[in-house]
Amino acid sequence: MTRTGRSGNHRSKKKRITLALAPVAAIGLAVPLMYSAGAATPDQVAADCAADSKELENCEFIPVQHKINSLGPNERVTSITDNCNITTAATKAFSGSASVTRVIQLEEGNVAGGSTKLGNSFFEVGVEFNTTEFNIKRDDTTSSFEFTLDGIVKPNHIAFFMWSHKRTDVSGFLRATYKEEQDGGKVFASPSEGATTIHAFYPQILKNGTPDGRLWLRNVECGTPQANGLLNSEGSARAEPGFGEGGTNVTDEEVALPEVTLQ
Image 1 (cartoon, one colour):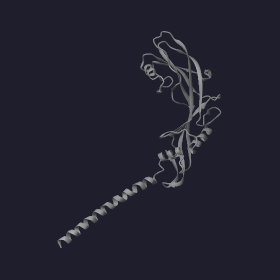
Image 2: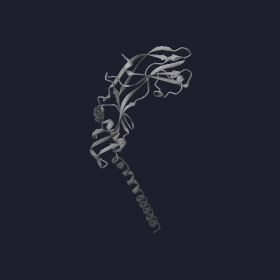
Image 3: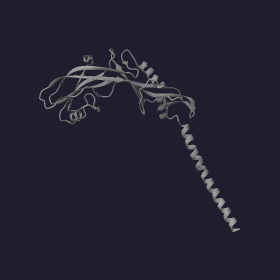
Image 4: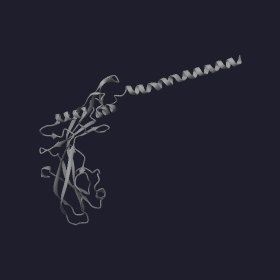
């Protein structure tokens, strides 16, 4: 009788353990199902649009606002002429080149390709914002120019030419239509309907087909941290301040683009 009682208690404990584990197992199975059902998140929509996912029926860029004559990155476009420890100014010939391309800036990075549905959408938006006053680069090919200019290097200064291209900044959001319903719908926005966080930068082009922008000669006093940093980084890319933003040791002189001798 005693052995039978212990056996009955043992079976009862096993049942209680089994019942306690069952809800945990059910929750574990639900997690991947819930994750799969929420596939159309803003980030996933942007990724699908950029990759031209086969799950998409269409993806388009919806413009919300735009700004003309927005300036692009500040770039050093000639080599540095060293006039340090010299007490007289020097006139030097500077040769350089500059190029621009359309840039599509998604929240997770840049996409410039034109072969996807999304790329075609950006081209169509570019057509919309191309005007007689502002001719813009609508596709992802490159426009460039080369120039030769004389510049005066101040005594005890280094000098070089800087460039920042003009562009039309069109901002908006992505609207994706999926072939099959996902998460209760087929149409989703990234990052949200009416947002202005997706940017298309369209370089503005002059009538002769070369990029429009600001070109200037920059003189930097020798022995300063700015000059030492430039000389130590010669031949490598580095961020530079914009026109008139270099500080007391830096002098900027803008050159009108029609005066540039194109090669």
